[in-house]
Image (cartoon, rainbow, N blue to C red; front, top):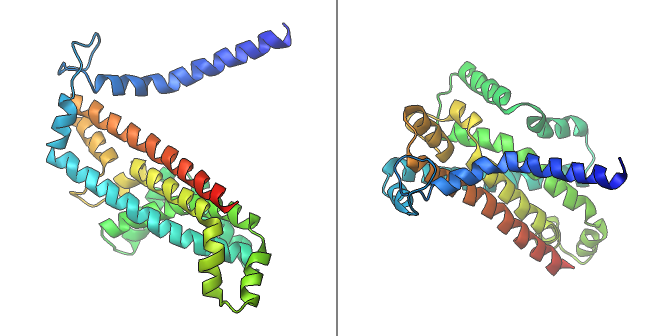
Length: 264
């Protein structure tokens, strides 16, 4: 077997793996436009009926609003804390720096279900009830490491001479950060915000453990609908989630690249 046939086998296997991963998603999106009440093939027609019913479903609209609010708050808080933590870890030397770095990155290494149960048991030990702030805290803990890693990678590439020049010209530390450092790392900050929002919007494992009664996000709403019955609305809601979770990162990457190009 020559090298060309080996590469052909690798390409074919790669294509099969991608088909196995993404065909079910494509089927869900396709069935979301099925005019028939029972999601099956062959389709009897194309219709936006189930998307219209989603719009008029109060439970789904509430879940969507909750997910958007939770994702936005998670993104803002994680970005703020991530920028501050990255500045401290990259620009300053202090005791326990390695320990703090490990603690910030640890949520990525720990399985999410383990982290969810651990946080829930800890708060139960503190006798704190489930609430929306607890849900927000859990999402921030889970998304913060991604923001820190992205911002750190950008901050390391920013030369300190730019900040030192601003300081030598009379700017204080805050003005130097606002006028020099932040614009230079803004593409990474924006990318971290997009990552945090997308991860929060899609999260289901931690949300099931942390959410209070009566509060549903889009993933947990889908999970609850699947337990009762398989409704065509689930396909429509799944299609909306796929579009959001794919379009938002792609749009964010495009904007981040344009921002980075403007700084050159």
